[in-house]
Length: 311
Image 1 (cartoon, rainbow, N blue to C red):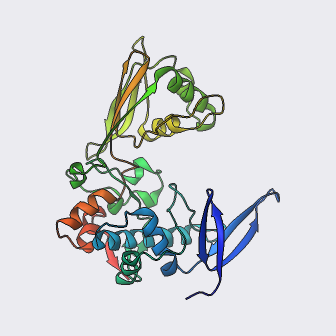
Image 2 (cartoon, rainbow, N blue to C red):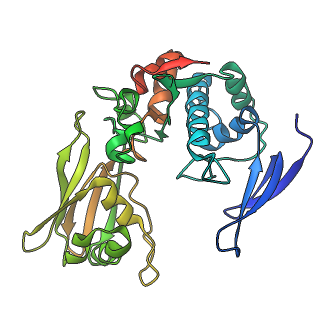
Image 3 (tube, one colour):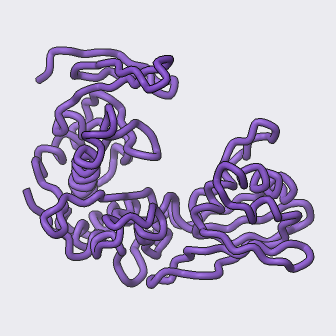
């Protein structure tokens, strides 16, 4: 057990962290990276408590522990010569609550101690999201086109996922069509998507291309003159959720890029499936499988096809 305990503020939330906390100056010499150095097996319970509901099944926690450990170790090797830190706290990396007392989180880490997911002797970046919406995304489409993403375990499973029967599967919201168009226009320069600037109105948004599992990878934006603008599904979601200083923030985010939208008066009625990018472990699906008696090993085999589960 580490003796050092430091209370740090992350995203306005105080978290107690065991480990050495250090400040690293950034290139501009005006800001610092605040980095907690924590052994991975001590770090993981705080991730599991942040990523999963406390009442969820132990097998779900164990599967998540292996995925989170693999993700962190992969990022350590990728960043050890280029960054002060391996992972960050938040939805773009891994949620982390600091030191926690949740028994099932500590059990899952001990149960899977040292176990990781490998492909061709390399620890994989084992992505995961809340809910895939019933069809798996591929890391090559939903994350980046990096070579390490074009591997079998990150290409997703075939067939419908069991998360279709859970509350995380379907969602709906609405956006003012004019404000969404202005938001996409404003995103064009820094997202480097010139066609966002050309959109003058939005009448509908619909899938125009899918991956091998049937999940949308590209969306077609149709304006009132029936002009079309095809963009990647992930770019549309990112642009639609971006905060723009001159515009009011959306009341609700678009939870995934697995969506369709149709204009009704001044509003776009958006209907979507799943929450998050949909790559790798689907947390709602894992919980459903665990409730059906599947082991954490079988859960990992489903969500990361042909990955080796090993020390």
